[in-house]
Image (tube, rainbow, N blue to C red):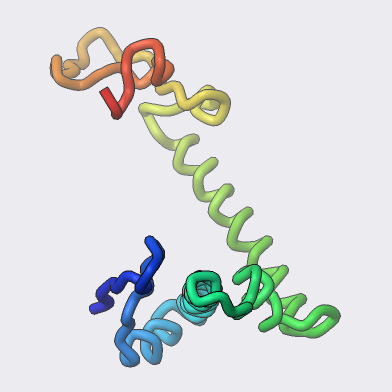
Length: 141
């Protein structure tokens, strides 16, 4: 389990991670956790460098992209994976909304649900989902 520590003299925090998690999670998540881990450690190094006055990197995203050199097969595979993942997720969402009894195409426009059938019961403590945050109050009230 990771635990957080504050960098002395700043408000920034770093996580002390288990080496077992860093070794096993990339295998379980098919390499996705490695990218997340690489980004996070580079962000923490950047924050530590700022706190101590050293240049340990400016943009952690560039560190992740450096793992995939341009014009290489790995970069192409990464791009294809991002494309397939995004549109695969979107396709599954369209299918689930299509077969749902509670949602229709308006869900994609503004998050509205279908009108409730007259014989349905909605408990009093459930608020309607079709209001703006500032019109009827929000989570910070």
